[in-house]
Image (cartoon, rainbow, N blue to C red; front, top):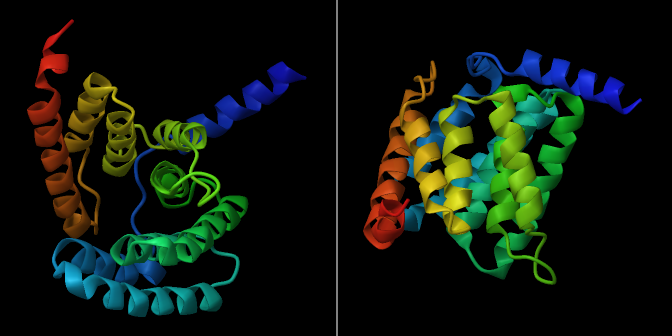
Length: 219
């Protein structure tokens, strides 16, 4: 029985591990607005702009029942809004984001090239643990590794795993995955997000090399 389930899992992963598919039209506007707010707009303006964008994303979810992509993007916007807001008041947003992602997983776990798992992994890595929040390093690692299996050459899957490894003090492997992220092929229609993400990756690599260069030099 176990071998049967293992075979099913391998077949599923082999089907999912393919080239990234373009952004669906229904969420393209949300994706571009998110990239502008997250990477270009002043930090002091982001919370209010993410609030408005979250409302737009929620409406798209309502207009497209049974589709995973709008739920994923509503979750991404909520998580970004929580980061912009900060503090305990952001916990309700990240809980809602987590619930949206888990609901999207039931619809289509491969949607948006594994974004469900990169987003879940990031949430579990960044949110405080019990009793404040639901953060859990083991779940974070599990979801981020699932994202890598689905999208092994994706800029986001490699970046978020590298960021997680950095937080755990595994600097050498973090650098390896961050370099893989920089080498990721461009995403059609996501040029704005790719440009912003690459700057984040380069900044993190610089930070790791500056603060932990001695550990990187050892064999």
